[in-house]
Length: 526
Image (cartoon, rainbow, N blue to C red; front, top):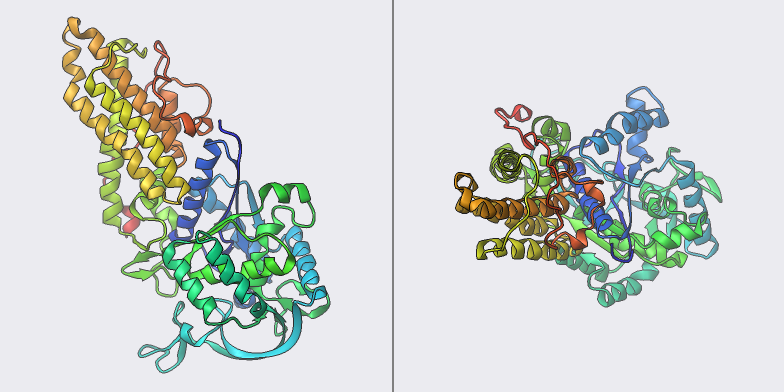
């Protein structure tokens, strides 16, 4: 593989107050696909995910359920959040919890440094606070409800629930000092915040002026205590953002931290301000390099609205994977939704794509080719004869698809990568229809041509197995085994996937079960 470059990608750590829905799974899958791709191209890759477990909302929910906050989060993490990773085949390298001692120690050390260096001071704050967001809200983050049970009240635009008026003695981070440094960062590194729509919003927000940030609460105690004043706990976002460096050894393992940092953050666009404004300002104050990239992806919409438990629009990943399988789940959300834009989920769309693109397109192609090698050549891959123009088209298609897909991944566009890879599926299906190997098999004089056609088709399948492995690890593993290949497909070099002639003639192929069995009903839509 190519010389290793560092690629550290981190999902946001998810707030565990309730069970995960497909919006959370979408972020996980997108991050995992990018990480798997970079691993296969030889980069020194690290994928971090985890859970955010402090804050007032957790405390209130735990009390309402008659348990302690720690018992509540332990239960949710064990029963809901960690199993999610298995459900959708996430190959993360680490899982960080904000209740881990390694994380809490880093938070205390980081805070102490900022306090000692004069970036934190005591003050008093009054403002509108959304418990759901764990955030003080600006006026433009609020609206007056015009109907329903909260009619006439100020509500959070995101949660649609009333905000509370809080007045507390808090500690503040001097974030206003970093306004110009942040604007300089955005100007000097236009790709620091992506996509452009999110970058524009961030630049506009910072240009309007930054206020100092309240970073502590004294009205409850479920959180990390400030090292110089244990009557306060650190603001949950200030705590949570530090997971990206606590997990990689900041202050405890300098070698590993130097190896991993800075990170790429793949997050929902609704938390872009935290990651593209507060987080780099915190790092600047501590003298730590800012992240490599903050990419704010769009929302998954159901019935035109962002998924929400309170609005009963949340869909659990297992509702989909139990019907279609994890590979189809991963493929659908990477293909149907352009990363960086909002996407609408519908059962009709995933069912149609499953049938047309996976079962009839890719799956049927793989089954037909393997079956014909078994039938016409006793299960041994034949050697190709002289290539004809139709064969050369497939060779060029595979080569170009591999180049285009890699370029797309590097610009955070897995949807474009799949579009490029799918040209192989479409042209191979057309190629087999045109070449009619089942007709060639009836004429002994055309034996060499039959061998060339099936060798060409098998080479195309080999490339598909490697290129699709980051997206669909289960089906590509089955295909790789059916092609008689050694090793794990997930370890094959993506940088050479488009090079022709990698299958050895005489290799024995194995039977291939249907990669995407027919789905008769959509039980999960009920």
